[in-house]
Length: 265
Image 1 (cartoon, helix red, strand yellow):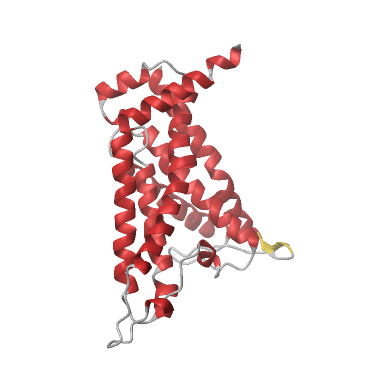
Image 2: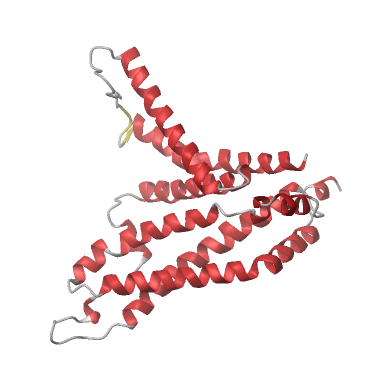
């Protein structure tokens, strides 16, 4: 059958098992390191005497840094591509480009990200369970609120905005994942440089068009964006941000796939 050329369950399973056999120690050490890091940083933060500080200023910043760490780990996808000899061996493995790409996608997105989120939850609860009351300082760990993922979205009012934030994070993760397929070595650094250059070019283009279309209002590097409603509670600038956040992952994942396919040619 023609589809067997692109995806065969048996080949996919063998590629998946092969990756686990080769990198199982690396994966286990990474997960253990994440748990230890979450536990230590949560424990140190929870020793603060003000419970409200723990809830409002510990969990969210720690989680943001944790997400950045997960993103950095996503940029280590396709580990065989970091070495020329391993790359040649990897590309010669029996399996389609799509299957090799899907193995990494399943490992990083379907398995690693949920496990990493569970590790953050476990680490914060273990840290709280490790604390003891101190009557002299008035420290009482029972007053520290438990961590819940829903608390991270308390400042976001609508379900639509919550959904956009989650999908935008997925899009950013897809960018880092595609960067690992695009660049052979130092993928995270090179991807960060590309992001910085692209962001700078976008800013410069906005400045240019601001001077072009609104010369009277624009001075120097000012940016003039005319916001107007296109729905009862939706502005044009919001819609543009929503579209970029919710659909850019399609471009990044397709880009990563074709870059991997290009390496096999």
